[in-house]
Amino acid sequence: MQVVPTMADMAWLAPELTLTVGLLILLIGGLFVPRDRQSAIVWAGFVVLGATLAALVPQAGRDVTIANGVFAVDGFAVFIKVIAIVAAMITLETSRHWLTIEGVRATEYVVLVMTATLGMMVMASGVDLVTMFIGLETMAVSFYVMVGYLKPNRRSNEAALKYFVLGTFSTGVLIYGMAWTYGLAGSTRIADIAIAAASPEGSIVAWRFAIMLLVAGLGFKIAAVPFHMWAPDVYEGAPTPIASFLSVGSKAASFAMLIRLMLEAFPSASSDWRSALYVLAALSMTVGNIAAMTQNNLKRLLAYSSIAHAGYVTIGLVAATPRGISASLVYIAVYACMQMGAFAIVTALRQKGVPGEELHEFSGLAHRRPWMAFAMLIFMIALGGIPPTAGFMGKMWLFGAAIDSGYVWLAVIGVANSVLSVYYYARVVMWMWMTPQESEAPLPIAPSMAIAISLAAAAVIIGGLFPDQLFTWAESSARALGVVSVAPALTLR
Amino acid sequence: MSILDAYLPVVLFLLVALVVTAAMLAAAALIHPSRQNIVKSQAYECGIETTTDARDRYSVRYYLVAMLFVVFDVETVFLFPWAVILDELLLFGLIEMGIFLGILVIGYAYAWRTGALDWA
Image (cartoon, rainbow over all chains, first blue to last red; front, side, top):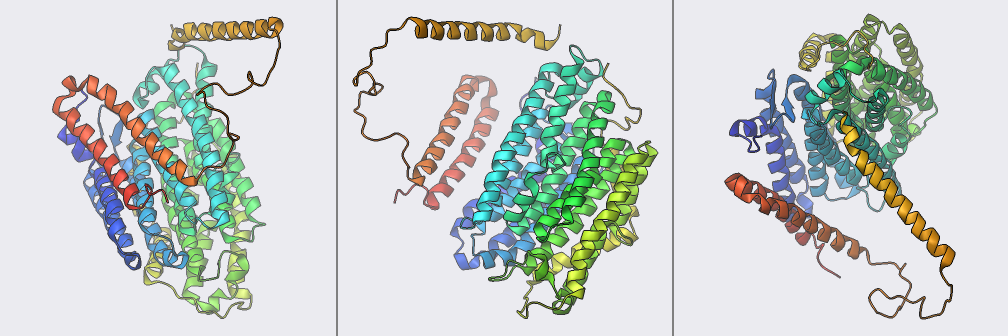
């Protein structure tokens, strides 16, 4: 076996290497930046992430597996990586003003956002259980620290501890599933696992057990019911920009891992994991939406809504057709825009001495900051799936894919849930327009924040009016997965 | 034969170990004479008189230093197998270990500069 990587391998790793070298330089360089010049570090991080994005460009449309078959550079990976990197860039831009309000150091913050992004990139590209696991842990450990970044804040500490304890437990479940898979297949490579699973030796029950452990472990990371209990508490206690990054980046990368594992490693067991994911999707949508109705804290509300959205995305994987997978990818991208936009507004409301998280703090926002309220309106109707936003187009595709594959009832559950969800999104809008202004305090908005919010809102509208480009891109990305279609439901025999 | 079958001896070994341990504990519980005194119940491991309760609060710095120690301990664990096969890895192995140690040194420099090593 060849152990020495070639120069060609290294060239394919250019985005990851750029990010790694950049964050190491930033870690040391940041120590020599004076406290009042912290903004420079955020800029440097932004530039490195931009360079990483640029290094991804030549990889578009390619499909190779490098480093002894553990790392794939394909359209699917590139799609997820773009979402992760853009999410990280938005996180940094929305954090700029927030960092000075909270009075915390920028260096570690920026570097941790970057290490988490690096983990997501490895997760998106991993075609080997060990590679995937290392990516997942790089991301998770960064998030454990970031969630508890506000050291004097008790809620932040509580959130970090909860996330750490539950996160390591779920990692244990996941790695146990990986151990069983390795024991049964005799390899950690996804291509080899698929071959072994196609003609399983030994107990079928053991194979099913392994798959269920993997689904449960990743179900925690995507916050799908019944593995969702941590999400509201963690999002509420975590710094707002981090909650936003956690709900978008972490979820996108974990979905990438779940989709790749199910489609490429276990296509021969599709009916087994499809029925499991069916239940997960139906429960996530219903529980998430119903629980969100009673929330008065915006961060908790968005946490429950993100649980519901994990359910919507899962529908595409249950359908398991090229159309279903591309619908999932589209919806992950659309969800990233609307969720990060909504969280950015919550971050913008945070001022000295004002938490800006409770629903009543949004009262009269339409008069205080009309364009901000308007942007929030766009994000809310997009999350609720109302045209002419990208949220509507994404959902239409998802439900269409489900019906195509014969999962009519799952589509019905999804539509019913979309209707339910409009109630609590409309509640936020009602507070902004129909209640008298509670606070006369000025609401300064940093220019970078205004740009980030405007871009997210524009993306949501443009994606709704001209969705063709995004759909085409997602379709070609979904086709990059080795398995084109597993539509006929297969059971392990 | 499934790959899991190869692990059967391990399972058997585990069972034997459990049975032997349980048997020895049970035998000791049944036949041992019980004559307690103060000397017997004192600590013996390091030969040092017990001063305080072991369940005491440590300075939080202790954990920081302990963490750094563990990091470099694990580094040594990686160095040993690497040294054994260095004659096969040649220049590539040398460069790779250089990168690995380089990243660790950056972490060390960071810890030093942020004052993680000052005990005060």
